[in-house]
Image (cartoon, rainbow, N blue to C red; front, top):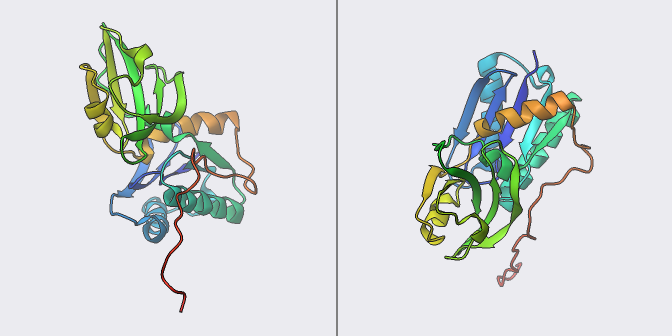
Amino acid sequence: MSRVLILETSTAVCSVSIVDKDSILVTKETSEPYSHSSLLSVKIQEALDELGIKVKDLSAVAVSSGPGSYTGLRVGSSTAKGLCFGADIPLISLDTLKGLSYAPHALQPTKNNYLFSAIDARRDEVYAAVYDPNHHLLLPGAPVILDGSSFNRFRQENAIWHFSGDGAEKAVELVNFPNCQLSSPTSSSIFFHKMAMNLLRAEKFEDIKYFAPNYFKAPNITKSNKPLI
């Protein structure tokens, strides 16, 4: 049996799933703020224990690789690399924006359905990408300032925009397009099931030594004004 451990830490959600070809075997997740560094390993162990397996019994570890929270992505990627290196199993990288396109959507057969993945980038900005219902990329991921002119090429009268991700609610409010639907305001490792299994079958693995998340932007690090002593 091919089992894959999926880690999703790109947003506030700390989510872990173990999946096989046909099903999601177990999921452990929390939305507790700033919990990735303290709870990710706990959730992984809980998932493994529930199935009665060890890391070496996995076929691969798949990690959501961004964009998203700098800290969350660092924790997820370093944990995934450590597990893969220690158990000598492959590492799979999962595009976070594409993963969000697999959230449940209420598609309308008579409309042009566009799947918008939106990750909060603070203020009126999101990291966004657009997909068709078959998850083919229509607009590559990039930082987007949200206003009434955002995503103009998709503003068709018979279009429905389906938003997922922790920037989805903000996007629905700011894009000023009447045919918007909120599919999921959060992310989850379960959204990445099909992607992970497809990449496992294709043997599209990362070089563990050189893999790094896709942050889209450099982290905003400020210098403290407090004295060291």
